Amino acid sequence: MPTVSVSATPVHYDVAGEGPELVLVHGTGGDSLTNFGHLVGGFADRHTVITPDYAGSGGTPLPEGELTLDLLVDQVAATFDGPADLVGFSLGAVVAAAVAAKHPERIRSLVLVAGWAHGDDDPRLRLGLSFWAKSLESGDFAGAASLLAFSPAFMRGWGEEGLAQVLAAEPPAGTARQIALDLKVDIRDRLPLITAPTLVIGNTQDYLVPVEHSRELHRLIPGSRYAELDSGHVVVLERPAELTELIREFIGTP
Image 1 (cartoon, helix red, strand yellow):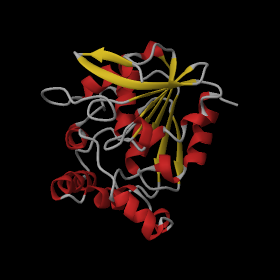
Image 2: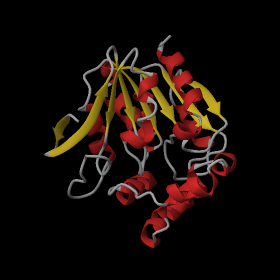
Image 3: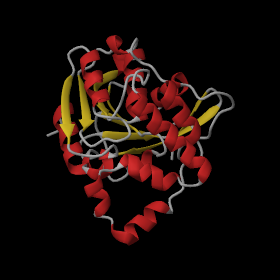
């Protein structure tokens, strides 16, 4: 796995395929493999797919001090040259939007999945994130994450064996600090700086980041397009085929 150094911290990322760059940015409590490993093949036939791990996930360690959005922006931006198609999921959508605002000349197109601009006026979002954080302390992270992250119909399909496997999963080392960042991010002032063609994707059964936040992103990004999927928050696992099709169509992959 290649690495690049940002602020004296090694940032790990993976590369697959050939063609124009496509960067996939993972969400809180996940990494490039768990969020996108099963999707890479759907793009690598036409793209050089780059999947970075930002601080606290995968092979990228946590730095000393506070975890900031600007650090994650710099880490992701260091893994590609551009112009690139940039896709972000959950916190990755927040990071991707901020990358596109800071480096407009390097972004060919932008796709934001299950993201948000801020949580100042949504107690439901803040409560969900806070509950998720507390579940780390109590040892119930996987169970709390499942209830918040997936739709009931999708979870019913797991069966008892599948549920046991999910509950045995361990969160990445940086999850608590990533959730702390989730609670304080506010990118409203950055969104008008985005110039790349943008697609915002919301999920109608999202219990972690309610779909209204995706709709707000769409309103705040000039000229953006909008789509919704019938899914819980972790649409990358619930609706991988539909999500891949939406992204491929938007970025111009036949």
